[in-house]
Length: 300
Image (cartoon, rainbow, N blue to C red; front, top):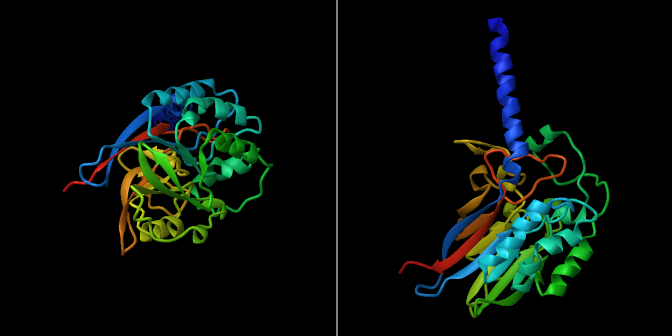
């Protein structure tokens, strides 16, 4: 082989192998992460929260559905679903089937843009560019059917809502917003200091834009839970996420971190999610995930 062709052909081979791994293996390599968060009063018994996000489910994704159903065996005290459940007009029954056993446990949810609007094809390169969230949509998804299924099972809808829920024998104050990525968030409607009488206060949102999470931190919520970023979806080993698809720094694209506003600091957990758009079914160095958050007592 001529030396001038050797490097391009080698690079092509490596690229093809990487794409096969990203689309053929990693996108289906579901895993459970376990994270401890010291937000309870010292000496309190732990509280376990299962965080599920960004299923992007289509009716034919049986392997994903079965994996999610099996998470009920963890017996969490509370389930938090941070949106983008749908990727097909006929996916609501599949989502309710996948989450079925978990719907029997205390739960809260917020919606994401992919619960409202049908996914569309776009140039994959656009994923690496800033996304304003403003776009034309192919069609509507049955968001209200999904909402009715969740609420009918007993889960709390936290889209621009503040409420209380019993979980693990405790009174938990919860607040949430609708999807900030498409500007449906109205935190101003539910803002205010945390309830000092609650055993715990949690804040939930789909897309962790700073205008939302900064306000939640300033109100004193010790733990914020979000999704949307897909953890970057395409990551570089040793470097991390290339993008977050919002104004969150890349280093906070997934996992547990500290988020500060200058006045206060809170814990922020961002899920890398379990799915992708059906038009970009690849993940690299960022496996699909759900997370079991074990809330524990702070050190004395």
